[in-house]
Amino acid sequence: MKFIDEYRQGDIARKLAEQIARLTTRPLKIMEVCGGHTHAIFKYGIEDLLPENITMIHGPGCPVCVIPLGRVDDSISIALEPNVTFTTFGDMMRVPGSKTNLLDAKARGADVRMVYSPLDALKIAKKNPDRQVVFLALGFETTAPSTAMTILQAVKDGVENFSIFCNHITIVPALKAMLDSPDLQLDGFVGPGHVSTVIGTRPYEFVPREYGKPVAVSGFEPLDVLQSVYMVVKQVVEGRAEVENQYGRCVSRDGNRKALEAIFEVFEPRDYFEWRGLGSIAHSGMKLQSKYAAFDAELKFSVPGLRIADPKACQCGEILKGVKKPWECKVFGTACTPETPIGSCMVSSEGACAAYYNFGRLSKMAERSA
Image (cartoon, rainbow, N blue to C red; front, side, top):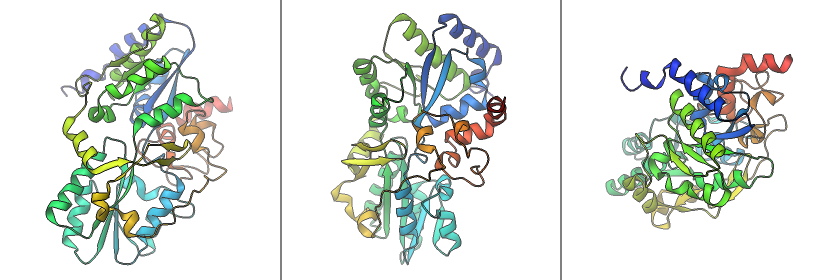
């Protein structure tokens, strides 16, 4: 298949890994920020190709994973309101709250529906003018433009029974939080690809400028990731710290102007937003501007708004920060599985625990028991 097979050639992957090994024997820790990269690393066995001195650390770039328990409980609270149809992406249906999840709320009689886009939710609102239709909006700048465009479409169409429960987040404050964390000493970053198609590479320039760490924005195929690791290691060896763009076929320095315009038109930064594992991070969340307050579910409905600690058995917070690997969690693969998740990292298609469970569990469990 043209433009797919070219990025999955095993002989080239092995040559890239050999070139990385020849660059240095110095131990290096490189964070892949995006959960999509984590899945690629384990699906294609990239970690097994890399030399032992290169350690890949997964980052917080999984939007479903970083939603805290309190916000999940708020979602369930809205879903259980009378005359409400609550819509969400499939990943969120099974993310545990403090006591239950949206799928259980549906079983209890709540009208909870899975959709593939916010426009699907708007269509439901148009077809059911007697019901309040709420869309659980989440994701980084990758998905925020589609939510923004849906709000603008709702305004244009005069739809009054549609609103969003906004949990959109931004990548740069999260990166700053990781860089300022005393628990984690990193040598460089494999930068997120999907987010960068929207925001470009310019926003990452503070990383080399202020922290002296290299960044290589990467695509998601195995050769993309390996080349990005090579670029980061080469910068370290040469004493450079820059933002390099491996994903040039999709990402530019200045991003997608139309998408950014939609975000800036509809949203504004929250003073603080709580992230699972990372705590409250200033200006890291988005909220609707006051002129679109009629579409804000947090204003339409009464939500608990409580901060709730993760279960003691779950180490999702440490995993999201990259301090621990999923297989180091005591409940990983036993009490916590994709069928019976305790933490969000095991549920999401971008979650680190799900990646390890699906692609790396047997080898890592064997190493741990050896």
